[in-house]
Image (cartoon, rainbow, N blue to C red; front, side, top):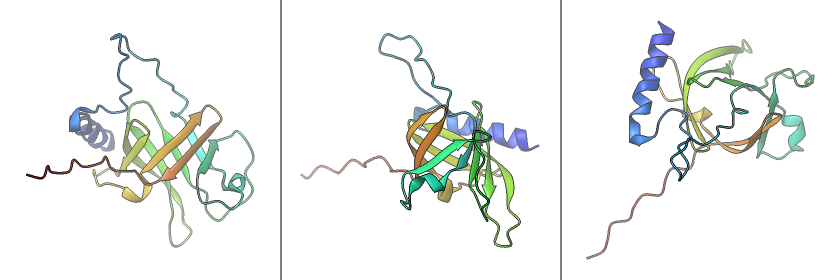
Length: 151
């Protein structure tokens, strides 16, 4: 049932604004662009590397290193088909991985729960990503609205 809901949400998102799920577009020659697949993996917040800075948030691939003990460490996992998981911060310290779906438009990543509700607090902008590191900032800058012409 969750996969059906996720698929339905993914299909709905593909029709929004002409931007497809995880769409990377095509080059000016009409040939598909080479897609960088390094984003599509499990990520763990490596906040120790941020040296006290709030941004960018630095994430490393799960299993790439041994992280020090922590009361909470954010985790994300993204596949190429719009399915994801994230670590839910529970007020009782009963943290758990939860299923979600996402859409990636350019460097903006929007997450939705299994019922289709927006997880705005988890939306983020990728600043850089490669196979060993993702730098991101929470929040997505909305596109600039067109100002009405003065007459």
